[in-house]
Image (cartoon, rainbow, N blue to C red; front, side, top):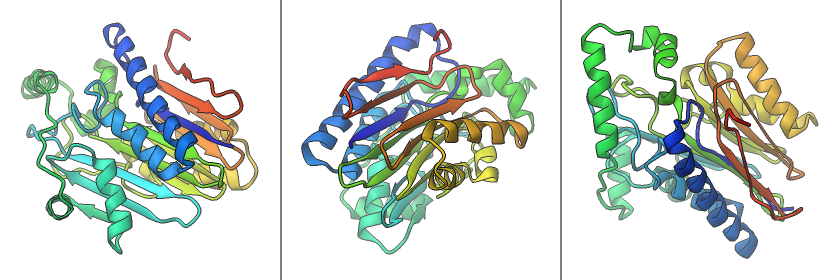
Length: 309
């Protein structure tokens, strides 16, 4: 049984960007699922799908990711193999085109799980990854606008995060993630993000923290999106995998995880899940969480998660 699900983050999707979001999701799942069918390799398929999303500036990952308070692009990513719990992650990396691929190199080329900041960047250079500037003019313009509002005293900082989201709900949108299973039963989860706009320099969210934003076991995998602080406090991805180990369906697991968020930390969150039988699930408490999914049951790509649906 082959299956794949991916997400493009939670938050408001402006009408003028919806077509780009859908097209990006479709390209990503087509590329990833092709690998899944031709090579039967969930790891490569997951990485490939996330690479496509990282290269699409409409998402908050890789090219076009959001900027920190001081105008830099600090990227996080993680990838996990469920069968062995092998994992690789990077946090706060700069000038990298595809952080998910660097995370895979950490998993396969080192004895470590997580590399951060300058160390991760130096490792990238050692691995032959060239310098790449992921900052786009569109993000720079958004950063200038929001920085100006912050200077004027508008509520755009962490102690006022809910006010920020209410004013600018589109800022949550963008983190990308994928969970895939191949015919060998290998489940792989991967997530990549630029974090939240105007985050403090050096801030790390849930994405590269195993068990928080990204996790996989032989029983299922999960990728999360939203306000990372809440996801880290609930270890949401690990919780989801534990639920699936208990036999709870992927969809019920996703719904239960959002219930957990709503009853505890109450932050904007979304999650995608996939269990060992190839069943998928997704849930969120935000306006949108665009997702794409496909399985070998019918090989039909489906896109969902927009507020109009």
